[in-house]
Length: 149
Image 1 (cartoon, one colour):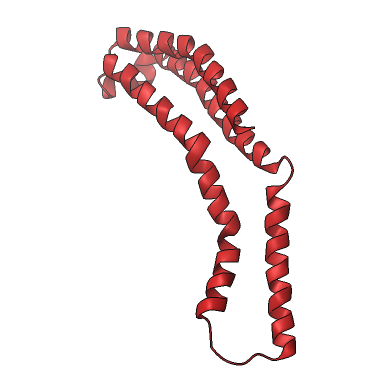
Image 2 (image 1 turned 180 degrees about the vertical axis):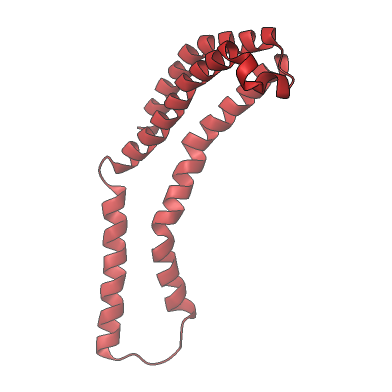
């Protein structure tokens, strides 16, 4: 049980790092990728003379890419994306209690706890831990959403 609790707190720390740093960084890289590709294409692309039409076409493409990046950056879309990640995690948190109860009630039918070497008393403690930790995880999520705003 102590290994289970320790692994939960490690997972909680990883979740905090993921939601505060890793997800926004990946989103930023994906958003800026077309601009970087255009810069690299301009820098290391073919070294030939371009006509006025080609230059105008390239400039229009540059403006379009920058406008798309600006539209994705402004507004509430980044916050809504983090909220959707949060809602999925809360759903999984609440369902974990139900799944543990299901495994406790249908222990003989499913044989899942016995296949993984989980004792009935340990499954009871896992369920109590899941119920108890739900409130505290939601409290941590409040602070995380506040940090993301």
